[in-house]
Amino acid sequence: MIFGDGPERDQVLELIARHDAGDWLRAPGFVDGAEVEDAMHRALCMVLPSRREGYGQVVIEASAAATPSVVVQGPDNAATEHVTDGVNGVIAPSADPADLAGAIVRVADAGTPLRASTAGWFADNAERLSLGSSLRTLLTGYADSTRR
Image (cartoon, rainbow, N blue to C red):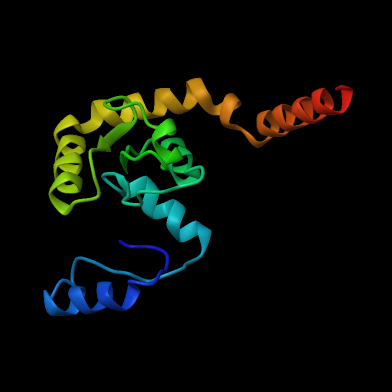
């Protein structure tokens, strides 16, 4: 399942059709959040092939569903800060299809123990990654800057 949209969407749809993959691969674009959440619970993993993410909220959402993530190593990819390789997912060395496939295979090979570890990672980090915690950090930083 490929959710979302972007400049390569037409190419993705063309490739799905060309490879007659429509029976097992869908790319519905943007959908209701409940559909994404349901898919997240059923997925082997969540793959975020982006080389550049400002935060990577979807990694946290996947972890909340005990779904390991595959993210791409990169100097501008903050999503990697939310993945401890082998604990709640895998960090692929690049967005190259072979590297992404290798990372997905690692998730598949790790099986249910990785899902359990992902759930544990989320439980251990949920408060730190919560909106409330983020707002407290922001307010503390603001208060500190106004005192200077």
